[in-house]
Image: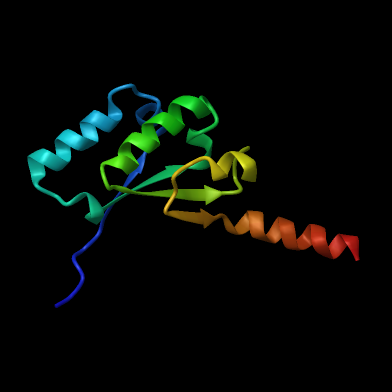
Length: 110
């Protein structure tokens, strides 16, 4: 038996900072019958910086539903690694430009 298909969706800054977004996700799961384990929501780093506390609250609520959460394009915004540890991400996708800049800086030091 094959693995069930995973559904992905991108979350905007407006959505993640909306007070009712987690409830909306929950209602959609109920209405569609989709298993929360089959849903992965992607959020960009820049969507977090507007209000870290509100974003953290919303993402924790969504995670509690059983939905997977991925950070997309880490390294393009202003999040620090210490802020990142507080969020319940299942996956972090690092932007290629971030990796290149880290490699360039480490080469400059030698």
